[in-house]
Structure formats: structure tokens, C-alpha cells
Length: 243
Image (cartoon, rainbow, N blue to C red; front, side, top):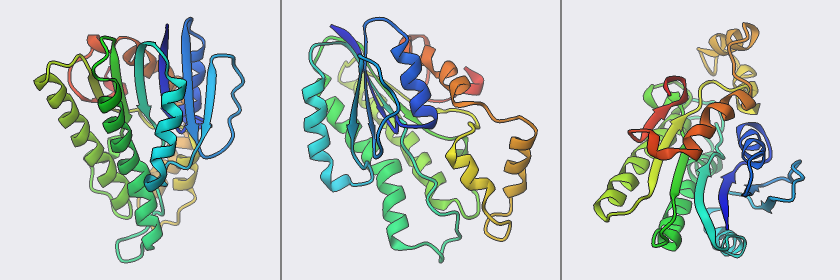
């Protein structure tokens, strides 16, 4: 039996760094899900290629995952995949961008949580769900309506899942964790936005130029203790900078 970790958005950034950190541990199986191919080559790593914004096709992914998860000693789902979408004011968003961001950031993580609880909650093993949230969930930001609201909703769904688990006597632990400001493709996308589209862009440019961004590996190192020892942490909505 192995400790099984399912990670979405595992081909780059924080998801890749988390997968690498967990694969360094013994008796571990990591199942990574992303649209693109994986750079990871490890005997304990299994890659599933799937576009997580395609919510209506998720049934095929879930069937795939169940084939790979056999007799887990513990099970953790890490919903990491997300998109900023287009940094644009309301009134300037295309319908497909709205659908893409809300499916990827909120619909799919919710569906994966629903699946994990339905399929595995009866097992007498440690079970953890970690939803990667954002400090931006607590702020109203021009041109970021989709991202901030989807992360705020993910926080509330996480809180609800934990409350329901307690009510039914489940040992499931659920977290929504802001990972700090991490140097990923999303940050690069923010810095390339014009100040007309996003008034605070200079703040993010300064973070990069002043070395204030964490590497994905640094952020992953802060998250791993939570993944491994969830019972040591109180609350649901957390910020790694305060752990």
C-alpha cells in the first residue's frame, strides 16, 4: 500500500514542484493531471493528460484515476490547476474566457472533491483535500473578477466540505491554501498586462525585480508539511506565509 497524491496542473510551476517534492519520499505514488505532457520521469509517477477546463468530459478522467488508485494507504487530492484568464474589466470579457476560468478554477476542483468524497470517504485511511487558493480571494481587484471570485468561492466550498465531513463523522481534512506570490507563468502573464488594463501592474513588476517572488520549489516546501501532517493544522482557509 502507498500514500497516493493526485495533483492537478502538475506539468509546471507549483504543481510540478509539489509532485517532485512528494516523489522524493518513500512509499509514494503521485498521479499528475495536466493538459500537456509531463517532464517528470519517475517510477512512482503516473501522468494523465486531460484538459481540466472540459468539465463535461470529466467522467473519463475519473474512470482513469480510479484505475490507478488501488489500495491506498492514504489519499490526498491537490487541486492546483488554475487560470487567471484574461486580465480585463467586466464588459470586455469573452464568453469562452468566462467559461474556461470558472470551469478550471471552480467547477473542476468541486467535481474532483465530490468524486473523492463519493468514492473514497468510506475507506478507513487518512484523506486530505488541498485546494490551492490565493490571497487575491480576499480582495476586490479591477480586471481580476473571474480569478478572485473563483478563488473566494473555492474557499467557501472547502469550508462547506470540511463542515459536512465533521457532521458525518469523517476523518477527511479539507484546506484552501494561499501559496504566497510564486514565480510562475501566471505572474509573467500579470507583468505583461498594460497599466490601462490593470492599474496595479507595477506592483507585480516590482515584486519580480526586487526578488520578492518565491520559486515554486520554495512554495512547495512550505506546503509539504500540510500535505503530510494535516491533523497538525487548524482551520480550513490558510496562507502558507502564516503557517
